Length: 88
Image (cartoon, rainbow, N blue to C red; front, side):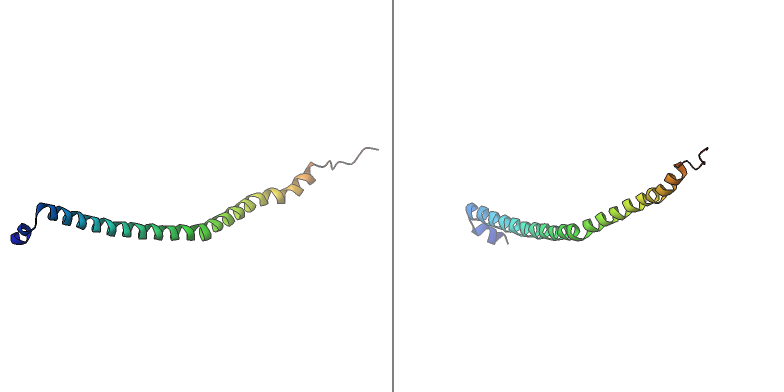
């Protein structure tokens, strides 16, 4: 192994080292880009499916909270009316 390393000049060793590091950098970038694409697809799925579901759930909750006040409005109106007969 020392013969193999001793055969090349310092310039060739540095160039080979840089080539190996650049290749590793390209591989790391490919993995990173692939990961970002996967995350992008998951975000699109969330935006298309989960957010409308959450909006619908919010709307249902709001309607449920408003329901008692709507159903009690006629009772409140009826109890506020003056039910005493007018004096002749």
